[in-house]
Image (cartoon, rainbow, N blue to C red; front, side):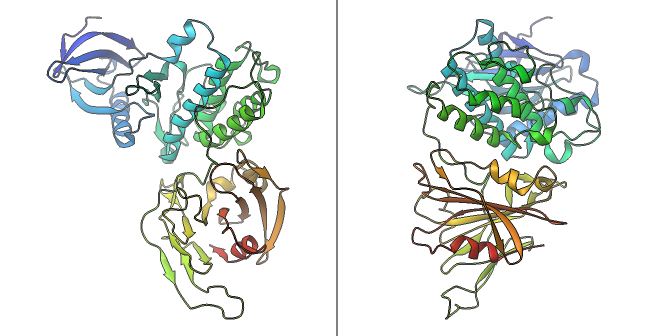
Length: 451
Protein backbone atom coordinates (compact mmCIF):
# COMPACT_ATOMS: atom_id res chain seq x y z
CA UNK A 1 0.00 0.00 0.00
CA UNK A 2 1.43 3.38 -1.04
CA UNK A 3 0.54 6.21 1.35
CA UNK A 4 -0.90 9.28 -0.37
CA UNK A 5 0.88 12.52 0.41
CA UNK A 6 -2.17 14.76 0.13
CA UNK A 7 -5.94 14.25 0.29
CA UNK A 8 -7.81 17.42 -0.56
CA UNK A 9 -6.44 20.21 1.64
CA UNK A 10 -5.00 17.73 4.15
CA UNK A 11 -1.41 16.52 4.31
CA UNK A 12 -1.37 12.80 5.13
CA UNK A 13 0.81 12.03 8.16
CA UNK A 14 0.32 8.35 8.81
CA UNK A 15 -1.94 5.29 8.54
CA UNK A 16 -4.51 4.92 11.32
CA UNK A 17 -6.06 1.62 10.26
CA UNK A 18 -7.29 -0.62 7.49
CA UNK A 19 -10.45 -2.64 7.02
CA UNK A 20 -12.12 -4.81 4.44
CA UNK A 21 -13.61 -1.88 2.55
CA UNK A 22 -11.61 1.20 3.50
CA UNK A 23 -8.36 2.67 4.79
CA UNK A 24 -8.16 5.44 7.39
CA UNK A 25 -5.38 8.04 7.35
CA UNK A 26 -4.41 10.81 9.77
CA UNK A 27 -4.55 14.13 7.95
CA UNK A 28 -3.43 17.62 8.97
CA UNK A 29 -4.75 20.95 7.75
CA UNK A 30 -1.83 23.38 7.90
CA UNK A 31 -3.86 26.61 7.90
CA UNK A 32 -6.26 25.45 10.59
CA UNK A 33 -3.67 23.48 12.55
CA UNK A 34 -6.22 20.66 12.83
CA UNK A 35 -5.92 16.89 12.63
CA UNK A 36 -8.66 14.77 11.07
CA UNK A 37 -9.28 11.12 10.22
CA UNK A 38 -9.76 10.52 6.50
CA UNK A 39 -11.53 7.32 5.47
CA UNK A 40 -10.89 6.28 1.84
CA UNK A 41 -12.73 3.53 -0.03
CA UNK A 42 -10.36 0.66 -0.84
CA UNK A 43 -9.17 0.39 -4.46
CA UNK A 44 -10.45 -3.16 -4.93
CA UNK A 45 -14.00 -2.03 -4.08
CA UNK A 46 -13.99 1.30 -5.91
CA UNK A 47 -16.06 0.00 -8.86
CA UNK A 48 -18.61 -1.94 -6.80
CA UNK A 49 -21.71 0.28 -6.82
CA UNK A 50 -23.23 -1.51 -3.82
CA UNK A 51 -20.14 -0.96 -1.64
CA UNK A 52 -19.73 2.60 -2.89
CA UNK A 53 -23.33 3.39 -1.96
CA UNK A 54 -22.81 1.91 1.50
CA UNK A 55 -19.73 4.09 1.94
CA UNK A 56 -21.70 7.19 0.98
CA UNK A 57 -24.61 6.12 3.17
CA UNK A 58 -22.25 6.13 6.14
CA UNK A 59 -21.38 9.74 5.34
CA UNK A 60 -25.05 10.70 5.22
CA UNK A 61 -25.86 8.97 8.50
CA UNK A 62 -22.94 10.54 10.36
CA UNK A 63 -23.70 13.98 8.94
CA UNK A 64 -27.33 13.71 10.03
CA UNK A 65 -26.50 12.47 13.55
CA UNK A 66 -23.91 15.16 14.42
CA UNK A 67 -23.62 14.01 18.06
CA UNK A 68 -20.78 13.96 20.60
CA UNK A 69 -21.23 10.22 21.17
CA UNK A 70 -20.86 9.34 17.48
CA UNK A 71 -17.89 10.12 15.21
CA UNK A 72 -18.67 13.29 13.29
CA UNK A 73 -18.19 13.66 9.53
CA UNK A 74 -17.07 17.08 8.27
CA UNK A 75 -17.05 16.59 4.52
CA UNK A 76 -17.25 14.09 1.67
CA UNK A 77 -14.78 14.27 -1.21
CA UNK A 78 -13.40 12.30 -4.14
CA UNK A 79 -9.81 11.41 -5.04
CA UNK A 80 -8.48 11.97 -8.58
CA UNK A 81 -9.02 8.25 -9.26
CA UNK A 82 -12.71 8.60 -8.39
CA UNK A 83 -12.67 6.94 -4.95
CA UNK A 84 -14.79 8.72 -2.33
CA UNK A 85 -13.38 9.72 1.03
CA UNK A 86 -14.83 10.98 4.34
CA UNK A 87 -13.20 13.62 6.52
CA UNK A 88 -14.08 12.81 10.12
CA UNK A 89 -13.22 13.85 13.65
CA UNK A 90 -9.99 12.19 14.78
CA UNK A 91 -10.40 9.99 17.85
CA UNK A 92 -6.95 10.63 19.28
CA UNK A 93 -7.35 8.11 22.13
CA UNK A 94 -7.39 5.03 19.89
CA UNK A 95 -9.85 2.15 20.08
CA UNK A 96 -11.13 -0.25 22.71
CA UNK A 97 -9.44 -3.05 20.76
CA UNK A 98 -6.10 -1.31 21.28
CA UNK A 99 -6.69 -0.96 25.01
CA UNK A 100 -7.85 -4.51 25.54
CA UNK A 101 -4.71 -5.73 23.78
CA UNK A 102 -2.82 -4.40 26.79
CA UNK A 103 -4.84 -6.53 29.23
CA UNK A 104 -8.16 -6.31 31.07
CA UNK A 105 -9.25 -2.94 32.41
CA UNK A 106 -10.41 -2.42 36.02
CA UNK A 107 -13.93 -3.62 36.80
CA UNK A 108 -15.27 -0.19 37.70
CA UNK A 109 -13.87 1.30 34.53
CA UNK A 110 -15.31 -1.55 32.48
CA UNK A 111 -18.79 -0.99 33.89
CA UNK A 112 -18.65 2.75 33.25
CA UNK A 113 -17.33 2.18 29.75
CA UNK A 114 -20.12 -0.28 28.94
CA UNK A 115 -22.67 2.31 30.11
CA UNK A 116 -21.05 4.95 27.88
CA UNK A 117 -21.04 2.60 24.89
CA UNK A 118 -24.73 1.83 25.42
CA UNK A 119 -25.47 5.56 25.60
CA UNK A 120 -23.75 6.06 22.25
CA UNK A 121 -25.66 3.19 20.65
CA UNK A 122 -28.80 4.69 22.19
CA UNK A 123 -28.22 7.81 20.08
CA UNK A 124 -28.34 5.62 16.98
CA UNK A 125 -31.49 3.84 18.11
CA UNK A 126 -33.22 7.12 19.00
CA UNK A 127 -32.55 8.22 15.43
CA UNK A 128 -33.91 5.04 13.88
CA UNK A 129 -30.52 3.49 13.07
CA UNK A 130 -29.17 0.00 13.81
CA UNK A 131 -25.35 -0.27 13.73
CA UNK A 132 -25.01 -4.02 13.00
CA UNK A 133 -21.25 -4.19 13.65
CA UNK A 134 -20.43 -3.12 17.21
CA UNK A 135 -16.96 -4.40 18.05
CA UNK A 136 -14.02 -3.20 20.19
CA UNK A 137 -12.44 -1.80 17.02
CA UNK A 138 -15.45 0.46 16.45
CA UNK A 139 -15.45 1.91 19.97
CA UNK A 140 -13.11 4.91 19.96
CA UNK A 141 -11.83 7.43 22.51
CA UNK A 142 -11.42 11.15 21.99
CA UNK A 143 -9.87 13.75 24.30
CA UNK A 144 -12.46 16.03 25.89
CA UNK A 145 -12.13 19.78 26.42
CA UNK A 146 -9.56 20.92 28.98
CA UNK A 147 -10.43 19.60 32.42
CA UNK A 148 -12.95 17.06 31.13
CA UNK A 149 -12.64 13.29 30.81
CA UNK A 150 -12.14 11.68 27.42
CA UNK A 151 -15.21 10.79 25.45
CA UNK A 152 -16.34 7.44 24.10
CA UNK A 153 -17.56 7.62 20.51
CA UNK A 154 -19.19 5.04 18.23
CA UNK A 155 -17.53 4.67 14.83
CA UNK A 156 -17.81 2.79 11.53
CA UNK A 157 -21.41 2.99 10.42
CA UNK A 158 -20.55 1.33 7.14
CA UNK A 159 -22.95 -1.53 7.84
CA UNK A 160 -25.54 0.59 9.64
CA UNK A 161 -29.05 0.77 8.25
CA UNK A 162 -32.18 2.73 8.91
CA UNK A 163 -34.56 0.53 10.88
CA UNK A 164 -37.19 0.80 8.16
CA UNK A 165 -34.80 -0.87 5.70
CA UNK A 166 -33.05 -3.32 8.01
CA UNK A 167 -35.49 -6.21 7.75
CA UNK A 168 -35.78 -8.82 5.03
CA UNK A 169 -33.25 -9.84 2.39
CA UNK A 170 -30.41 -8.35 4.41
CA UNK A 171 -26.98 -9.56 3.35
CA UNK A 172 -24.92 -11.36 5.97
CA UNK A 173 -22.91 -8.68 7.73
CA UNK A 174 -21.10 -8.34 11.02
CA UNK A 175 -18.06 -9.54 12.92
CA UNK A 176 -17.92 -13.09 14.33
CA UNK A 177 -17.96 -13.06 18.11
CA UNK A 178 -20.21 -9.96 18.19
CA UNK A 179 -22.74 -10.89 15.53
CA UNK A 180 -26.27 -11.82 16.59
CA UNK A 181 -27.67 -15.18 15.38
CA UNK A 182 -30.25 -13.49 13.14
CA UNK A 183 -27.47 -11.80 11.16
CA UNK A 184 -26.69 -15.20 9.64
CA UNK A 185 -30.20 -15.42 8.16
CA UNK A 186 -30.78 -13.13 5.15
CA UNK A 187 -34.55 -13.27 5.69
CA UNK A 188 -34.53 -12.41 9.39
CA UNK A 189 -35.42 -9.15 11.09
CA UNK A 190 -32.41 -7.05 12.03
CA UNK A 191 -33.35 -4.31 14.50
CA UNK A 192 -32.18 -2.63 17.70
CA UNK A 193 -32.08 -5.99 19.50
CA UNK A 194 -29.29 -7.01 17.11
CA UNK A 195 -27.15 -4.22 18.56
CA UNK A 196 -28.21 -5.26 22.07
CA UNK A 197 -26.67 -8.67 21.40
CA UNK A 198 -23.38 -7.00 20.45
CA UNK A 199 -23.55 -4.83 23.59
CA UNK A 200 -23.88 -8.03 25.64
CA UNK A 201 -20.85 -9.49 23.86
CA UNK A 202 -18.86 -6.35 24.60
CA UNK A 203 -19.91 -6.67 28.25
CA UNK A 204 -18.68 -10.26 28.31
CA UNK A 205 -15.38 -9.15 26.80
CA UNK A 206 -14.98 -6.41 29.42
CA UNK A 207 -16.30 -8.07 32.57
CA UNK A 208 -16.26 -11.88 32.33
CA UNK A 209 -13.50 -13.99 33.83
CA UNK A 210 -13.26 -15.80 30.50
CA UNK A 211 -14.77 -14.35 27.33
CA UNK A 212 -15.00 -17.62 25.37
CA UNK A 213 -17.57 -19.53 27.41
CA UNK A 214 -21.23 -20.45 26.86
CA UNK A 215 -23.45 -17.68 28.22
CA UNK A 216 -25.14 -20.21 30.53
CA UNK A 217 -21.79 -20.74 32.25
CA UNK A 218 -20.85 -17.05 32.37
CA UNK A 219 -18.59 -16.25 35.33
CA UNK A 220 -17.83 -12.65 36.15
CA UNK A 221 -14.53 -11.25 37.33
CA UNK A 222 -14.12 -10.55 41.03
CA UNK A 223 -15.72 -7.23 41.93
CA UNK A 224 -18.49 -7.26 39.32
CA UNK A 225 -21.99 -7.14 40.87
CA UNK A 226 -23.60 -10.55 40.44
CA UNK A 227 -26.72 -9.09 38.78
CA UNK A 228 -24.65 -7.96 35.80
CA UNK A 229 -24.35 -11.58 34.67
CA UNK A 230 -28.13 -11.80 34.25
CA UNK A 231 -28.09 -8.58 32.21
CA UNK A 232 -25.45 -9.99 29.87
CA UNK A 233 -27.27 -13.31 29.53
CA UNK A 234 -30.49 -11.51 28.60
CA UNK A 235 -28.68 -9.26 26.12
CA UNK A 236 -27.09 -12.26 24.38
CA UNK A 237 -30.20 -14.45 24.32
CA UNK A 238 -30.48 -16.47 21.11
CA UNK A 239 -34.00 -15.23 20.34
CA UNK A 240 -34.27 -11.46 19.76
CA UNK A 241 -37.60 -11.43 21.62
CA UNK A 242 -35.82 -12.54 24.80
CA UNK A 243 -33.38 -9.60 24.77
CA UNK A 244 -33.76 -5.99 25.86
CA UNK A 245 -35.59 -4.11 23.14
CA UNK A 246 -32.94 -1.43 22.60
CA UNK A 247 -29.76 0.13 23.97
CA UNK A 248 -31.71 2.26 26.45
CA UNK A 249 -33.31 -0.86 27.96
CA UNK A 250 -29.92 -2.54 28.21
CA UNK A 251 -28.37 0.55 29.85
CA UNK A 252 -31.19 0.84 32.39
CA UNK A 253 -30.90 -2.83 33.38
CA UNK A 254 -27.11 -2.56 33.64
CA UNK A 255 -27.39 0.54 35.84
CA UNK A 256 -29.85 -1.23 38.17
CA UNK A 257 -27.57 -4.25 38.46
CA UNK A 258 -24.49 -2.09 39.08
CA UNK A 259 -26.28 0.04 41.69
CA UNK A 260 -27.50 -3.06 43.51
CA UNK A 261 -23.96 -4.37 44.04
CA UNK A 262 -21.99 -2.89 46.92
CA UNK A 263 -18.75 -3.77 45.15
CA UNK A 264 -19.55 -2.00 41.89
CA UNK A 265 -17.87 1.24 40.99
CA UNK A 266 -20.30 4.21 40.97
CA UNK A 267 -21.46 5.82 37.76
CA UNK A 268 -19.77 9.02 36.67
CA UNK A 269 -22.92 10.97 37.28
CA UNK A 270 -26.25 10.30 39.04
CA UNK A 271 -28.68 8.37 36.92
CA UNK A 272 -31.86 10.18 36.02
CA UNK A 273 -34.95 7.95 35.86
CA UNK A 274 -35.40 6.80 32.28
CA UNK A 275 -38.28 8.67 30.75
CA UNK A 276 -40.10 7.76 27.56
CA UNK A 277 -37.48 7.39 24.84
CA UNK A 278 -36.97 10.26 22.45
CA UNK A 279 -39.66 12.75 23.38
CA UNK A 280 -38.45 15.40 20.95
CA UNK A 281 -41.80 17.04 20.46
CA UNK A 282 -42.85 19.71 18.05
CA UNK A 283 -45.95 20.53 16.07
CA UNK A 284 -49.13 21.42 17.97
CA UNK A 285 -51.87 18.84 18.28
CA UNK A 286 -55.58 19.10 17.77
CA UNK A 287 -57.04 20.21 21.11
CA UNK A 288 -60.77 20.58 21.60
CA UNK A 289 -62.05 22.37 24.71
CA UNK A 290 -65.63 21.72 25.64
CA UNK A 291 -65.64 23.35 29.07
CA UNK A 292 -65.49 21.63 32.44
CA UNK A 293 -67.57 18.98 34.13
CA UNK A 294 -69.30 20.91 36.91
CA UNK A 295 -69.99 17.78 38.90
CA UNK A 296 -66.65 15.99 38.87
CA UNK A 297 -64.37 19.00 38.35
CA UNK A 298 -62.81 17.22 35.41
CA UNK A 299 -62.11 19.04 32.16
CA UNK A 300 -63.84 17.69 29.07
CA UNK A 301 -61.12 19.01 26.77
CA UNK A 302 -59.25 16.44 24.71
CA UNK A 303 -56.04 16.23 22.71
CA UNK A 304 -55.17 14.09 19.68
CA UNK A 305 -51.84 13.27 18.10
CA UNK A 306 -51.08 14.42 14.55
CA UNK A 307 -52.22 11.11 13.04
CA UNK A 308 -55.53 11.14 14.88
CA UNK A 309 -54.93 7.61 16.21
CA UNK A 310 -54.64 8.72 19.84
CA UNK A 311 -57.18 10.85 21.68
CA UNK A 312 -56.87 11.67 25.38
CA UNK A 313 -59.25 13.41 27.79
CA UNK A 314 -57.20 16.15 29.45
CA UNK A 315 -57.05 16.88 33.18
CA UNK A 316 -57.97 20.51 33.97
CA UNK A 317 -55.29 22.94 32.83
CA UNK A 318 -53.41 20.39 30.73
CA UNK A 319 -52.75 20.51 26.98
CA UNK A 320 -51.16 18.30 24.34
CA UNK A 321 -48.04 18.65 22.25
CA UNK A 322 -45.97 16.38 19.99
CA UNK A 323 -45.65 14.78 16.60
CA UNK A 324 -44.62 11.19 17.20
CA UNK A 325 -42.54 8.69 19.12
CA UNK A 326 -38.93 9.62 18.42
CA UNK A 327 -36.79 6.47 18.19
CA UNK A 328 -39.80 4.18 17.62
CA UNK A 329 -40.53 3.73 13.91
CA UNK A 330 -43.13 1.84 11.92
CA UNK A 331 -42.52 -0.27 8.83
CA UNK A 332 -42.58 2.84 6.61
CA UNK A 333 -39.85 4.51 8.64
CA UNK A 334 -42.17 7.11 10.14
CA UNK A 335 -42.45 7.72 13.86
CA UNK A 336 -45.10 5.73 15.69
CA UNK A 337 -48.01 7.87 16.98
CA UNK A 338 -47.36 9.59 20.33
CA UNK A 339 -48.01 12.75 22.27
CA UNK A 340 -47.30 14.39 25.61
CA UNK A 341 -49.99 15.98 27.77
CA UNK A 342 -49.08 18.32 30.60
CA UNK A 343 -49.68 21.82 31.94
CA UNK A 344 -46.34 22.61 30.23
CA UNK A 345 -45.57 19.82 27.70
CA UNK A 346 -42.16 21.15 26.68
CA UNK A 347 -40.97 21.36 30.28
CA UNK A 348 -42.24 18.13 31.75
CA UNK A 349 -39.05 16.17 31.06
CA UNK A 350 -36.63 18.80 32.31
CA UNK A 351 -38.58 20.25 35.25
CA UNK A 352 -39.12 17.82 38.12
CA UNK A 353 -42.09 19.83 39.42
CA UNK A 354 -44.09 19.68 36.17
CA UNK A 355 -46.52 16.73 35.94
CA UNK A 356 -47.45 15.14 32.66
CA UNK A 357 -47.90 11.96 30.65
CA UNK A 358 -46.53 10.39 27.47
CA UNK A 359 -48.83 8.20 25.36
CA UNK A 360 -47.52 6.16 22.44
CA UNK A 361 -48.82 3.37 20.19
CA UNK A 362 -46.57 0.86 18.38
CA UNK A 363 -47.48 -2.15 16.28
CA UNK A 364 -43.87 -3.29 16.31
CA UNK A 365 -43.65 -3.45 20.10
CA UNK A 366 -46.83 -5.53 20.22
CA UNK A 367 -45.05 -8.16 18.13
CA UNK A 368 -42.07 -8.45 20.46
CA UNK A 369 -43.73 -9.14 23.80
CA UNK A 370 -46.62 -8.67 26.18
CA UNK A 371 -47.74 -5.55 28.00
CA UNK A 372 -46.56 -7.07 31.29
CA UNK A 373 -43.09 -7.76 29.88
CA UNK A 374 -42.84 -4.25 28.49
CA UNK A 375 -43.78 -2.65 31.80
CA UNK A 376 -41.38 -4.94 33.64
CA UNK A 377 -38.57 -3.60 31.47
CA UNK A 378 -39.36 0.01 32.35
CA UNK A 379 -37.83 0.03 35.83
CA UNK A 380 -36.47 3.19 37.46
CA UNK A 381 -33.30 3.52 39.49
CA UNK A 382 -33.40 5.11 42.93
CA UNK A 383 -37.16 4.56 43.24
CA UNK A 384 -39.26 2.20 45.34
CA UNK A 385 -41.49 0.01 43.19
CA UNK A 386 -45.03 -0.82 44.27
CA UNK A 387 -46.40 -4.26 43.27
CA UNK A 388 -47.51 -4.39 39.63
CA UNK A 389 -51.30 -4.30 39.33
CA UNK A 390 -54.01 -4.53 36.68
CA UNK A 391 -56.39 -1.62 36.20
CA UNK A 392 -59.72 -2.11 34.44
CA UNK A 393 -60.38 1.23 32.76
CA UNK A 394 -63.12 1.79 30.16
CA UNK A 395 -63.40 -1.96 29.63
CA UNK A 396 -59.65 -2.39 29.03
CA UNK A 397 -57.10 -4.12 31.28
CA UNK A 398 -53.93 -2.07 31.81
CA UNK A 399 -50.77 -3.42 33.41
CA UNK A 400 -49.66 -0.68 35.82
CA UNK A 401 -46.42 -0.27 37.77
CA UNK A 402 -45.95 2.64 40.20
CA UNK A 403 -42.50 3.88 41.25
CA UNK A 404 -42.45 6.16 44.31
CA UNK A 405 -39.97 7.99 46.55
CA UNK A 406 -37.66 8.55 43.58
CA UNK A 407 -34.44 10.24 44.69
CA UNK A 408 -33.69 11.78 41.28
CA UNK A 409 -36.11 13.41 38.84
CA UNK A 410 -39.86 13.02 39.20
CA UNK A 411 -40.88 11.89 42.70
CA UNK A 412 -43.50 9.46 41.34
CA UNK A 413 -43.49 7.71 37.95
CA UNK A 414 -46.22 5.38 36.72
CA UNK A 415 -45.69 2.96 33.83
CA UNK A 416 -48.72 1.41 32.11
CA UNK A 417 -49.31 -0.64 28.96
CA UNK A 418 -51.90 -2.70 27.16
CA UNK A 419 -51.98 -4.51 23.82
CA UNK A 420 -54.95 -3.68 21.61
CA UNK A 421 -55.54 -6.30 18.89
CA UNK A 422 -55.13 -4.80 15.45
CA UNK A 423 -53.75 -1.56 16.87
CA UNK A 424 -50.58 -2.32 18.78
CA UNK A 425 -49.02 -1.85 22.19
CA UNK A 426 -50.27 1.26 23.95
CA UNK A 427 -47.69 2.67 26.35
CA UNK A 428 -48.32 5.39 28.92
CA UNK A 429 -45.87 7.00 31.31
CA UNK A 430 -47.34 9.33 33.92
CA UNK A 431 -45.82 11.77 36.39
CA UNK A 432 -48.92 12.65 38.49
CA UNK A 433 -49.39 16.07 40.11
CA UNK A 434 -48.15 16.20 43.70
CA UNK A 435 -51.67 16.71 45.06
CA UNK A 436 -53.53 14.39 42.70
CA UNK A 437 -56.36 12.20 44.02
CA UNK A 438 -55.80 8.42 44.38
CA UNK A 439 -57.79 7.68 41.20
CA UNK A 440 -55.87 10.16 39.02
CA UNK A 441 -53.96 7.50 37.09
CA UNK A 442 -56.97 5.25 36.49
CA UNK A 443 -59.05 8.24 35.38
CA UNK A 444 -56.39 9.30 32.92
CA UNK A 445 -56.07 5.77 31.51
CA UNK A 446 -59.86 5.56 31.13
CA UNK A 447 -59.76 8.70 28.99
CA UNK A 448 -57.39 7.27 26.37
CA UNK A 449 -58.79 6.11 23.05
CA UNK A 450 -56.69 4.54 20.30
CA UNK A 451 -57.46 3.27 16.83
